[in-house]
Image 1 (cartoon, rainbow, N blue to C red):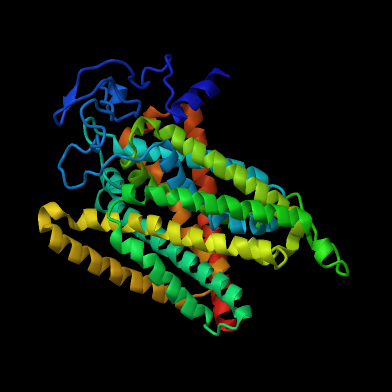
Image 2: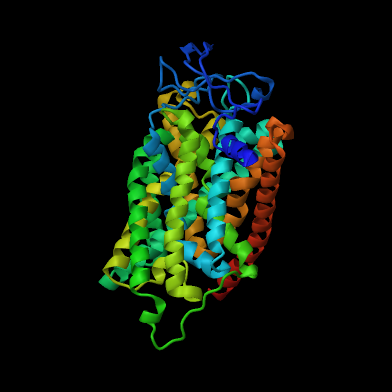
Length: 480
């Protein structure tokens, strides 16, 4: 029991008095970058195992400065986001389109999907804390992004690998958003006599998404949008849940055999696991969300609350959807519920969510590139920086739109992206970088076992899921 308590304390940054490597919390008088800090940070650094504290990230003098960025002023971001806005930024991306394929994942795994969802939420909370710890592995210094973590841990190859998966995740999921929104809009307006094809609607959706992408500069500027995206996602989950309970498959198709349900389906677990991991994977966004937080020492609670809220939402829609439609459920779930006003409202709300969430997701990619190429007003001047930023963001978005139009297979494309990028970013890279930066001795034996289990599960999901998704994508492309 004591070991479990210490493990929980370590995971969620709660000081454990019995651990010599516990976080240093209490008064201190360190002054860094001209700011007077009132207490020591609860974030563990690589130096805390030697008894060297890192100063807190909240200042009496300037709470809007990005505390922890002590190298230069080029990457400083205004810290204006509170708990709710930070929570919403994560949940907005997580439970939007992710919730739509949870019942289908249950159909692949059976009721054991409940355990997988709970496990994924715990992993997401854990690796979210590890990711931010890695940003502060050096006292008095904050790294700015996921690729910088990779470089600090494994050199240039670590940076390139992290950047590759970040790009694949951000751009790939944006493609999924455009595909899904285009399909939904086409289905809504075709009955009204509008003759535009799905691909044209995808282009229109991409243009609408591009507008905030071109205007917004930092994650803090997009935080307010996340609250509206969160509301839209909750509405979709409520509608899907109610309609599943009200009109199950047996009621919609009384003359057909009832759908089957299974406790566990071994062959489908790896693929479904990668899809469920996708539903929780926002690791790439974590550094930018935390950088915009007004009170960054609340980060562990933000990560935990967002994962638990998402898990509750997924269990609600997953259990009811699988109960109602069994092995006959399709992805997205909105294609299984009866057509009518509720389904129409849900599709409209998910389209709104996509338009709101995509810019937040794309900012993750853009900010990484801008940091890497030093596209900043301080270096280029405001006008030149704006022109260059607008030009390259527009060029990238044109490419994303082209890929979306060329590969309009939502389920297969989502499975491929989730298997490759999401699994790596969700668990493999954060744990590998954390162990490299801090050393394996920083983790007690039971935490090392937990890390091994997480890495083993993630490896299976990544390899097996990718192979299955590629086969399905090739088959669907050939069949047209």
